[in-house]
Amino acid sequence: MSLDRQLAAALVGQHARARVGSGLLPDAQARLLGLTSSHQRNRGCNDEITVQLGLSATPGVRGGVVSSYHWDGHGCLLSQASASMLAELVPGIAASAIPALIGHFRAMIRTHIAPAGGADELGDALALVDAGRLPIRGTCTLLAWHALEDALSEIPQLV
Image (cartoon, rainbow, N blue to C red):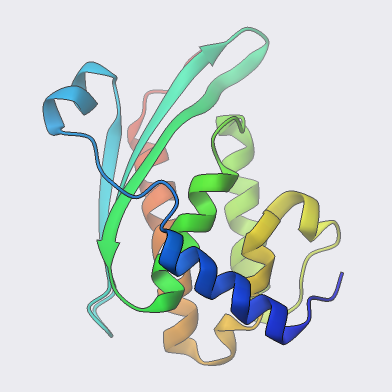
């Protein structure tokens, strides 16, 4: 699937303004819900993202399902849009599928080529396909994805 550059830019801008999923839960509530968090900072431009992630046990789904994704941060349009896109994308996804999803996104940013079936798998994040053409912009785009990966690694996997 090819995404028109104007349409992609509009979608990125819309997500950066909407900040879907933005707003962290208070620490006490996050602990009560069993959420884990990860704070990531891009040293090149000072963008920062904190992600809170929770999994819930789901019969027949090894590792559980993402039940909660909250984030907060500040930075450029790309880092904020990417975090917002993740907030729409990951709730309801099996935890075991997240590493492959992150791998496909990283490959897309590195190669500037949308993966086959990318629209279905990456949703609105497909609009970020050209973000990695400038390395610092690719790093900004990946910041929330790194935080998601780190937060997921901190959660004891549900059986």
